[in-house]
Amino acid sequence: MGAHLANLDQDAFGVTCGERGITRQYGLTEAQEDLGQARRQ
Image 1: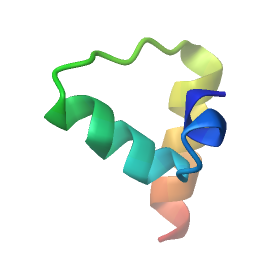
Image 2: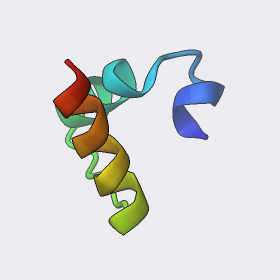
Image 3: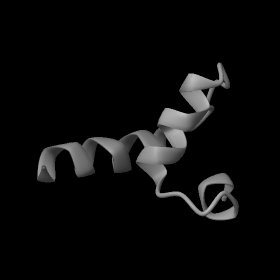
């Protein structure tokens, strides 16, 4: 939701959060989605 509000894709949002020292909390579902996306690349 934060990425949507910031008008960024998930990757850009994660980078932006990291640059600002904001930790992202996500659960198993999000981790599985990230792994799935990484495997498709």
